[in-house]
Image (tube, rainbow, N blue to C red; front, side):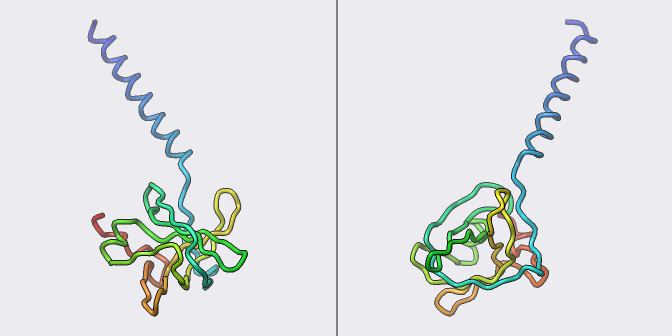
Amino acid sequence: MSRTALSKSVFAIVLFALCSILALAQSAPKTPKYDKATETTVKGVVDELKNVPGNDEGTHFILKDGDKSILIHVGPEKFLKEIEASYAKGDKVEVKGSKVKSAEGEDEILAKEITKDNNTVTLRDSKGEPAWHGWKL
């Protein structure tokens, strides 16, 4: 293979790879931003736990209060282990956080503080920035 043909092949492969990365980045769901204007406090029982892969994702749970359910974004699993915070089905909790809309238009909450058994875990600072940013997870 000539040097020119090899150069064109390498260029084509690199161009394809970059286009693929950009396409995937655009299609990946984005984590909603914390908005202090939508802060709310909800109480209920942890009904279901989920672990969602991705940056700023991790542990989520469904909080149930009577017949109402809402998804709570908690934080990365490694961070929660570091700060010794854990949640299980049946836990009674109070969650303070920002109410946001999912990609499907459903209400969800980005947790800022979670209180369980009179112990409060702070997950975000006063501006809503995640406490795990800057940690090596």
